[in-house]
Amino acid sequence: GQQLNQSPQSMFIQEGEDVSMNCTSSSIFNTWLWYKQDPGEGPVLLIALYKAGELTSNGRLTAQFGITRKDSFLNISASIPSDVGIYFCAGRDTNAGKSTFGDGTTLTVKP
Amino acid sequence: EAGVAQSPRYKIIEKRQSVAFWCNPISGHATLYWYQQILGQGPKLLIQFQNNGVVDDSQLPKDRFSAERLKGVDSTLKIQPAKLEDSAVYLCASSQVGGGPTDTQYFGPGTRLTVL
Image 1 (cartoon, rainbow over the protein chains, first blue to last red):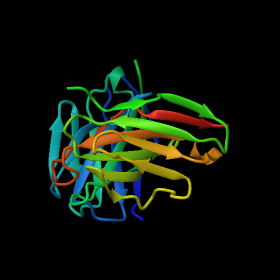
Image 2 (image 1 turned 90 degrees about the horizontal axis):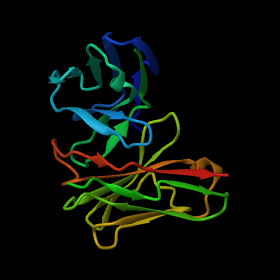
Image 3 (image 1 turned 180 degrees about the vertical axis):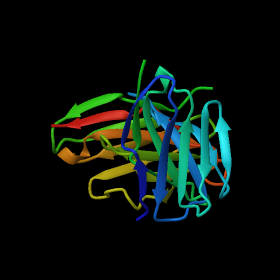
C-alpha cells in the first residue's frame, strides 16, 4: 500500500529558530496536506497543496508540493512555544477523499 | 459552528470485551471517516461513509470491527472482541463532500482506548 516517510522523527529547537521537515512517498498524490496535532486533540489542517510545484504560506508556515508529486516540505519560521506538537503530512487521493498519513514529526520548542 | 463530537473520551476494557464509540459529525457533512491512531503513528483510515453508505472499508478488520451510520448523520464504531493491539486513539472526521480538491476533513478529539 501507499507509505509516507516523514523526517525527522523529532526535533528539539530553541525559540526563535526556523524549522524544516519533509515528507516523501512511493506514490503520486494529487493533494498534499500538513496537519498539527496537540495532545488529546485530533489533527488540525494547517496547509493544503493542490498543484505540483505549488508554494503556499499560512502566517509563519510555508509548504511546498514537490515537482514529482511524491514529496512535500513544511517550514516554520521564528518558532514560538505554542508551535510544540506533532506535525503530520498526508497525501490524498482527491477523487476518493481518502488520506494517507505519515507517522509525524514531534516538535519541541525550548523557551 | 460546532465541531466533530466523540464519546467517550477514554475507555479502559479487558481483552475479549466489547466496546463502542460514538461520533456526531459537523452538521451538513456528508462524509464521515473513522481512523485508528496507534501511539507514535499517524492516523490510519478504517472506514469511510458517504451519507449512510460505505465508500471504503478495505482496512477495517471485519472479523472484530463493525461500523454503521444508519441515518447518514451519527456513526458508531464497535470492536468485539477487543485485543491488546486494539489499544489506540480512535478518531472520527467529517467533510462536506468526501472528494474534490478543496474538501477538508475536520477531526474530533478522539477516544483513547486501552485494552488490558
